[in-house]
Length: 220
Image (cartoon, rainbow, N blue to C red):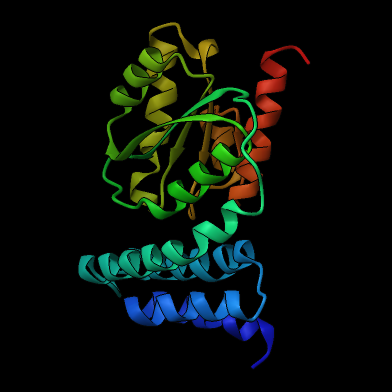
């Protein structure tokens, strides 16, 4: 089996919502020397993206989405320890509040970004999934964060990202926090349209963006 076939098996297991197969595929990746981050980016995330698109086209329904999510969590249970071994925690460089937009129950993409942010030395406040825009703002104030990260994995929940920014503008606090967006359906064009401070299409890219925004905030 070629190296990329191990990653493909992760993707297919998630598409099928097969928890045990997903766990075994992740273990096979590690045994074969596949980079755990590549397994996440091209196996796990790709599988979830495909299932999400099927859901948007009404070719898959909530049970299939939940099964895919469970399979993805099984993959992360295997890969997360290996990913954590790739880096060492450093002194906290800043604080990020992260969650998924209202109506969105997905957690895996958010959790991957959160894990890598912690590895980069950030303090992370996780507000969970299906979060109202007002809650993002309220919790950001309480935690005195530097950056608000809003994830949306369905086109129907993307407006929640815009709502966070609009609320901050309405209350005169837009400059208090940097706001970044991400998730399968989001794009740089969307980020520009809603006035976000940044967008990235990968978890490592999101971490780099947060580091850049923090340096900018500190005038470095």
